[in-house]
Image 1 (spheres, rainbow, N blue to C red):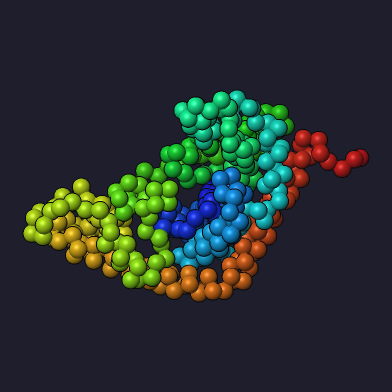
Image 2 (cartoon, helix red, strand yellow):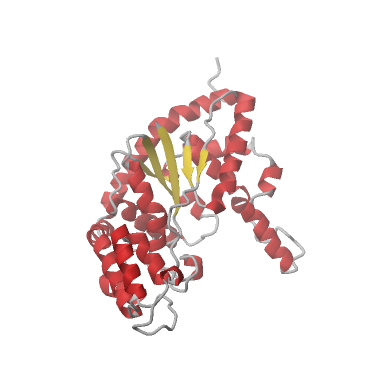
Length: 334
């Protein structure tokens, strides 16, 4: 059985891009008996860049409710809040003592911040850089190695972190014996990357997202804002050059995609195409939206599920950390 681990940083509200690109495929995979799935709310990671307590707390609530509303079976998957597993920060320190500073210096996030400081003419290349930003690849390594994940689905921009986790884990194994499995990076080229309202990748950093749980009227209003060209109704349109079509095919069946291609060739009006898109997305999310709103109004249910997940996670983490501490010499005196 493969162990798959996915973390979701708690700094924002879920949008359609998150749903299509990460949440939906992850939940589908979790139903496969060949996989043991770990999903966690990365609230410690959130603190690296977000120092707004209410935002972190609200995001944690929204993301947990989202996964539950979309059908994550918490009896089959291990669904937990990172901060509920005290073994993770303990392991982070053990791994920090194995992590080479030169490796941390090569972290993309750190190098990007140094480059920005340099471009702005700062005398201090490390201006504004916290140890959280500098060393968070070690925390990420602890997240992965704590449960000996064999597969970690990531975007292309995250592959370096998996390489660093393997490097740190291998160094620990070299000094203290074989304890960690080396995780495999899984980049799914088939996963859709949705364009946002302006055509760039849908991202909260671009302020171009379509929030996942908008009420029907607001969802339709957002979809009607998707950028299009100036072709009039009746003029043939190219589905390969349309942000509307890019989003449509992420939700549609093959038959529906082919039917929409015919509509584009026949010159469908942009307003009509967007209406079809709205109806498709709204239909897919309607039942889950009701469940999400119910959960948001009953946070005790969310908390109970996270506590249950934390207990399951610690059944593995507690004895494993004891094994690791004993390996490095932190053990009862005898």
